Amino acid sequence: MLVPIVIIVILLVAAVSVVMLAGRARAATGALSRETRKRDDDATSSTSTSTELATSSSTDLEATGRERSDETRASSFGGMLSRRRGGEVVEYEPVDEEELGVSRRQFLNRGLLTAVGFGLAGFAPAMLAFLWPLQGLGGFGGTVNIGKLADILAAIDAQQKPFYAAQARAYVVRYPKDPAILTAAKKVYKPAIYKDMSELGIVALYQRCVHLGCRVPFCQTSQWFECPCHGSKYNRVGEKKAGPAPRGLDRFYATQAGDSIIIDTGNIFLGPPIGTNTTGQNAEGPLCV
Image (cartoon, rainbow, N blue to C red):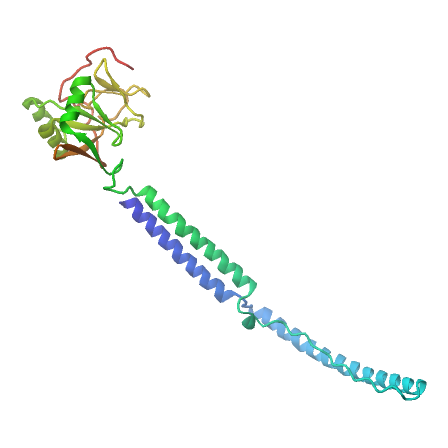
């Protein structure tokens, strides 16, 4: 539960940061520093003065030129041509950003933030679904119905090997109901696991080797679980016998619902410590590894 909570907190912090940055970007858009505004004011003043002088001079020159032109036309064509209208000087005015609505910089900033928001919205649920196994939906990580107890015990006795439940990634093996063996087991195993041993006569072992995670096959000749990766060996009920494994095979809690056995693969119980040997079973034949 800790990992999903941490992920949710990180996503919330990221979302708040994005919103704050967006607010700052909008507030800063179009804002100018004090020095820049001062330079612009000075430039505007000097430009206005120069423009007024240039306009006054150009207006006088233009009026004088028009008068001479009109006089020349009147003398040349007998005064038949009328005087030309004076042209008007059109001053260019830049587009007001308020009339435009959104500036280019604002559009790009908002577009970028929107794309990031959509990316987080699509990625966050997928990441949470991957890291947070859904309970109760069946399959590994939830509860798995592996079949009827009578059929499981019959298969174990007929084949002389554990019953393998692929969907639960577990081996189901018999556990002896001998009082002395159960007394020894009660001192080692968790109450939930001991209940399976004493009442159901079974134990559900996780297929994963506790050394480096390889799948551990069952050796038919030795009647032990023997890891082919690094040689760790466990007896029929998953207690460590040899190799580099730090403990026995991990196990799952199993319950009986009617005639069926339900394995809870969402909760893994650590295997018994090194030296545990409640059944006293030794290798019954040649080792496979």
